[in-house]
Amino acid sequence: MKFSRMLLQIVGATTLAILLGAAVAPRAAQSAVAALVQVTNTAANPVPVTPVQLPAVQVAAFSGPETPNGPVDVHGPYDVSNYSTIRLSAGAVAPTISPFCLANPNGCQLGSVIYAFALIGSDSNGNSYGLDSFTVTDGLSVSRSYQLPGTSLQVEISVSCSGGPCGGPTANFVIFGR
Image (tube, rainbow, N blue to C red; front, side, top):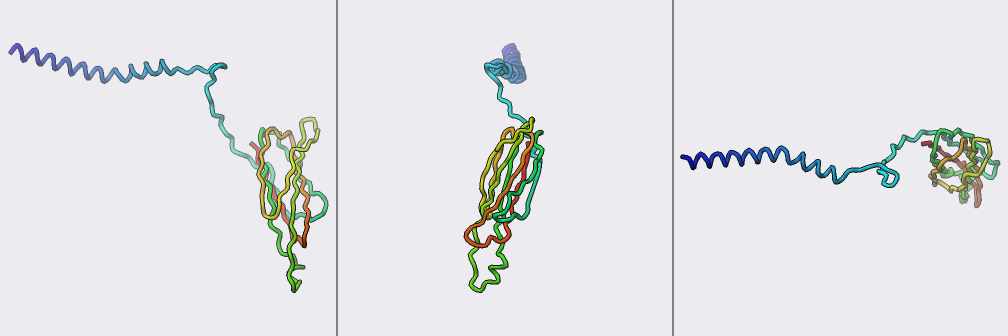
């Protein structure tokens, strides 16, 4: 009798110790890991932070006909002073068949159209500078990003045609700010 009572006390104490250990052990393990992995944001050891990306805002858009081998078409200036980055997507719509080609019984070869884009930026003092220039050919597009573009942006488009009639060339661009 004495032996079974002692055995029952040992089993009860062991069970209680196991239950108590299961309840306390996760907290103790968490605090031990937290002490080993403590992160401090200092200049010597900066904590990486991912900046919040603001959605892009459409600043300007244009789509319209251009005159081949004609004067430079100037668009803007557009106010970009509120944006640290802008993205410009520019394109060219493939030319349509001209009435000359339809009326010609032998058909004709459409010419190649080259769209030249020049981006002119201005700083806060009104000083102009060439931000970028690029060309786009029939039906293609270009997308470029610029950091700190200035306070205003002007887009100049000139169109040249070679190798036959061009049809009705159409240029387009969209400016997004962030």
